[in-house]
Image (cartoon, rainbow, N blue to C red; front, side, top):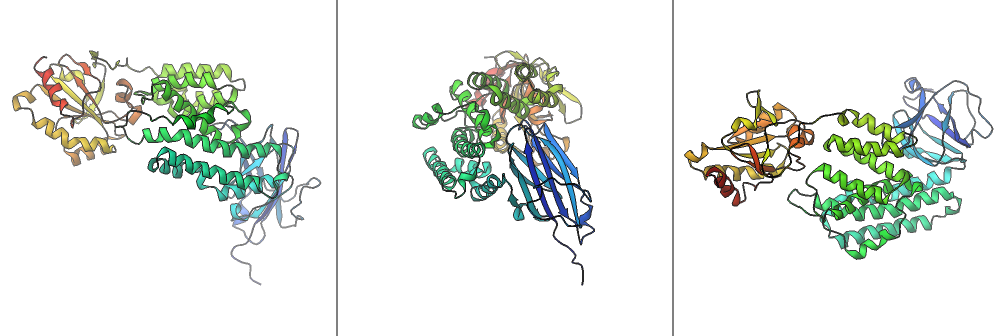
Length: 506
């Protein structure tokens, strides 16, 4: 009899939880395959603060023999060909955890006091898994629900719908999604076997998935284009639902839909405080969002929101503001779980001393700004003192920037050769490398002076001039001061007259 080239690995795992400890035990059938026998461990990982920065990770080696407890193997008897594992895991509340084997990962629901056994084929973890034990009902329901409604919880798919549907159409769509999800949950034959904590988890997932996408519609559509300068508020009839919810729901923190809801909730109401005008710089946005969050959230939801926001956006925000928000997190974070992650991520940034930033207003000086010139040497706007400077901030990847370049050429050509002697058209790129920048210049054939400030939104140009969108234009007078911090685009008929007025001294 020939031994097959491949075979099943049969793994069964038991999660037996007593008080704050979880015991994970099981076996792997390694018979018939020398190659697969090299896999010598299983793993479990729990994201303690939902920031992907502070994990409780466990790894258990596979052994030839382990003494299993009573009831340790409801999935079947252990055979001599099987290798065994055992680990102790700390668990103080219900959690979503990643269970890993042979490079495969599945999400499982864990709850103190529940046993859970996992049985699956080693090469086909997600599709072949069978649950048993006290925690089986929750995990079996979760798997069926996630399979049936994956599209409803997909941010990418839902954002595409937002961009193509009017707000009332989109709200009806997600309302119907919630109705179907709730019907599936309410009519589930084994619902009575689900624990109270798991039922709360599922109810929160369904509720906050609807609410987060509803609040996301104005934000996603406002961010479709830099030309859109305002956020369209939701109709008042849709806002009533937000008056009836518990914003700071510690029990809901386990739900990704709730955590995403917090982000969109604060963003939406910070926009409201800003008159539904889009923010023109990240630091002002951060300050407004902090006001909303600290006023409406508390406890862990507040710590999570602030920490998550800083981890995602911190390097676009003034270091002093980041440090101030970090100090607030540190003061409230008794466990240190959140403050530690923020410090690891932004510790160096908080210590950064940026050049004295230009207040984007009339007569702001530009002497402190430097960029890389085409000749490889440092250049400064002050190099052009005595001339009117029209600055165009752009990047090779920016479609709207490229759309303006034909108009830039038309604008250049409207001035006489004598007038051009007193004008500098300066293009500052945000591209990440000289190679990308120079290749784009070769393709675009831009007429004027060229500079590079690498780093995108973390570049010196973005920080110095407080830029959060491109294309962006500045008009600088002969003394080197910013006259128009948000100058007209080349396609705007008024751009020519603004430059001409400065040129003749008006």
